[in-house]
Image: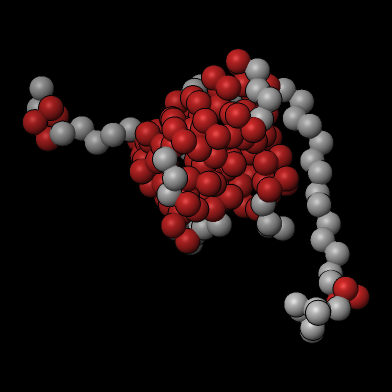
Length: 173
């Protein structure tokens, strides 16, 4: 007895599994895993600690990569509101909440690394574009590169957006 009488194996579409080249550096590895962690947190609402632990158990990470992973994820989570304000400022036609989740998290990570981890601008942008190439849609690479280039060119303006507002009673001191 066939449980699926309308099922014909010839109608099944083949699915291609895309294998990515391994990351070249420990930081690149950490960034890839961080993007996966941030994506899952955004999509599922799972707790940060749980997702981090699960991903670290699934991946073979060096101590350095694991440390860098935690710094990126926890830093992005801590500064997410200011990062999103900055993204919206430099890409006003694409509010972060309407952006593809991958795009949004690549930008968050890159901006966090540029301004809070003092990473080299060209390296961070190149790594973000590589993540966009690996995990994003067709136009993601251009979009990420454009937004990050604009932020890099206007770093003082970006830094003002990323800095927490000074409470009124502290301004007069």
